[in-house]
Every structure is written in C-alpha cells, then in structure tokens.
Image 1 (cartoon, rainbow, N blue to C red):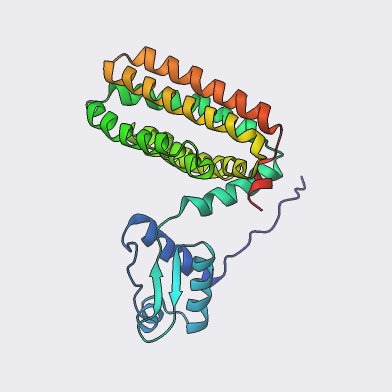
Image 2: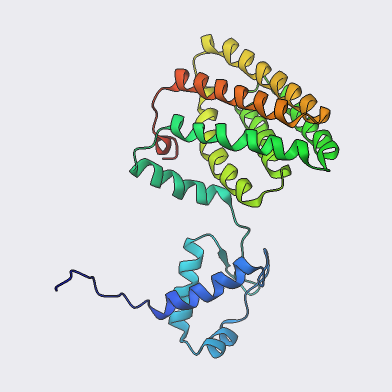
Length: 253
C-alpha cells in the first residue's frame, strides 16, 4: 500500500534553541524585565555559534517574548506577555475562517454569565463587588467619551471574568476583549447625529452593570447568571444591528 505521507521537517538549531528559551520564559524561570544570560554563557551552555544564538533571538523577538536593547547596558530582556499580540494573530485566523464580529461576540453569551455564576458563588464575592463597582464608576464618568468608555467598559467585563478565578476563561476573554474593543472604539468616528444614541447605550450599560453587581451581592447565582445572559445577548444583538456582518480582522489592519 502506498501513502502520500510528507517527509518530516527537521527543525533548525536556532528553532530548537528558541524553544528552550521560550519554555524558560513561559515557566517563569525567566521573568518580565529580566536579562537573558550573556551570549558567551548561552553559547557555551547550548554549544551553539553566535549566529545560531542571534537567529534564536530574532525568533523570540518576533514572538514578542524578548526585546533587544542596544548599547553597553543592552542585550535581550524578557517582555511581559501581551494579549494584544495574541489577539492580532487570532484575529488573522478568524479572518481566514471568514468569522464575523457577531459570531465572536456570541462567545461572550456562554462565557460571561458562567463567570458571573462562579463569582457569585465565590467566598471572595464581597471584595470582588467592591472592586467592580470602582470599575463601573469609572465607566459612568466616561459615558460621553466614546473611545474612553469602550476601554472602561471592557475593563469591567474583563475583571468580572478574571475575578471568577478561572485562568483559562480569563485568557479567552482577554483575546475576545482585545478584538471587540478595537472594533467598538471605531464608533468614536461615527457622525455626530449618532452620538446621543451612543451615550444612551453607554448609560444603559452602566445601569446593567450595577444591577448585576446587586444580584451577585445578594448571593443569588441563578438570578445573576440569568440576568447577565439576557444582558449580553441583548448587547450582541444590538451591536449586530449597528455594525452588520463586519469581519473581525477588518478592524485590525
């Protein structure tokens, strides 16, 4: 029997070295802002040439895991992992798949209400509500600043998910929020005739946040989850009517 199996690709030495350094960064062995060991030390440790080491640096730099500083006090330093970088890669993949913003937004209908339930059931709920009220107050103060409000609003939604305590859920929400926020901030360039409606939308959002927090504070997880699902569904439907079937990556270019 014949097969059409493709030959295995042997990774380059620089790719293997970049993978080892990447693993150290992701495990926390190398922390944000920390310098990598000297070139001579790494060359000796891994038995590689300077050319291979610098090629590995270029790979890690392209992945936004390190930055190369020039000068006497320069060299490679570890960067913080930035969800915006991941969001752009995910956005490109979503465009290739023909994904619309509405489809992406609908993920929130399943994600955020679940986070609200977990938050309500958490023993840390009182402290979380106090923190979230501060976020909502900032959003309330920015209802007429259309671009600024999007940032504060998504800050609130992100915190709800983060305070629910599930790291995987938080990462997914970060990716969605980065992409959706880029889209919503475009509304600041909308005609002035639409401005009053946008401000009303922002005020409704603040009131919805306040109601959800009262339900969380009451300890009624069923009611809190149900209300937030109803609210997020309404938000997704509203944005779909405003923006139509816009493709996600159109707003990342």
